[in-house]
Image (cartoon, helix red, strand yellow):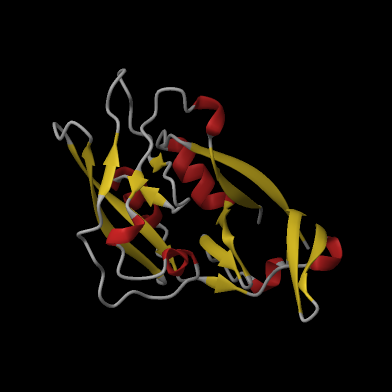
Length: 189
């Protein structure tokens, strides 16, 4: 099966709304929403605003200043149809800056963390943080297909910033006209 790194489609973003999330209203570290940590007590009072001027449109993958995977109900429904059991859909209410509109959206908390990165076939660089710690920055991913086990939406262990999807999920998203997404095929070994 083919797999893709899911990206926001910046080439077609000219008229899309952009969410501004007030970090001071978070009751947790913002990076917890990307590390696959399950939330038991979700704070739905997070302050989220956007500019709705100049005929702005909402994309199904909604760009935001924290780089979270925030989606509309339409994209949520497609992901749910894939029957991934380690996904949380955390409600977010976004208000336009002029307070004339409210959007009900979802932060997709991907708890499917897979140890499938194949460094031998990936293109990456190593950065020394200090004498005891190094960071790997991957430019081109290669993943071990045998480790994924038919999961349609996942993050990689120790590389939680990137989101990966199966060809099956990509096709469902394209068939349903999902907006705001771009896909980069990754090598599967």
